[in-house]
Image 1 (cartoon, rainbow, N blue to C red):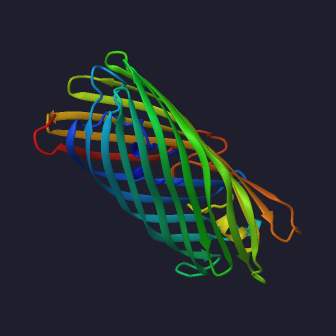
Image 2 (cartoon, rainbow, N blue to C red):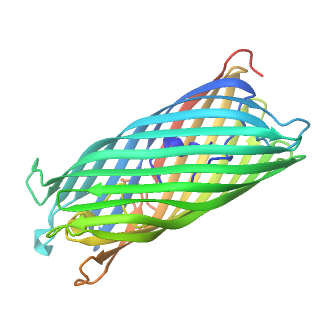
Length: 390
């Protein structure tokens, strides 16, 4: 179970059945803190910028039990394991578009608070001497209430927005081990939901999509190499309404979530380090995290969104054992993405609009500076043996 429970992204790649450092043998608990950001940035011309971000601060607790595979089989995944993790966070939303009266661009400001409620459960059961049946479930959810000011003076309230995003994953898979090598395949079900409502517009999307994942791990000596891929796709039901007449607009629209991940780890007697790179692609018929002010006005005017996001995530995890019973852990994530948002007029009278959204941190990134500052997150925590460490 990787860093997905303590990051701001809801619909980015999940890590249900592997990819993390080898867990402790025996019974153990873990505690941790995380700070993370998800940011979206729309450039209007050369100097005008419409930015929006959501920033959660997580507390994580977990408990688990594991037994490693015997005789050098596999590449670090236990043959038997049970684990539960919970990550709760308060979050802060901010959006700003400065006014440019000479170009008929009015100021839009948004400020809000919300919460994340994330859970992960894993069971791994040995079958014979070389195989394990794996079952995992994960829920990532964010809900917030935003205060929106469109064109008003300071502290003027134009409308209130309720916004939420939720992803529920379930996977069942099979893992086979050879000496120093293991391979896994799994069937995955994902329920993806997004909700975005103001007094002038309403979007509610939810649906179950299907797919699978596969993973190969190889451990030559102190090194471990991992290749992981996943993809789910299908249609989700979308209900929309907007001013002036708020007539119902219902559709079944395609959604796809996919990722490819490559990781490498190295172990010393007290220290383990793991570095992973992930390319993820998300296609969704809604926006339910950090909408920009430009989008807010478009939705209220009757435009319907389709988002396609290509993003790269880099994750670094370091773990150090102070004693056999206490191990500290530090994790860091940086992400850069490019999102294409297509806005289609629900009445069919106005031309379709395309917004190039940069998935960047709040301190940089522009069309002339493609890299910019990344979306950033870090985790600091520890795991503890319960009873005699094994």
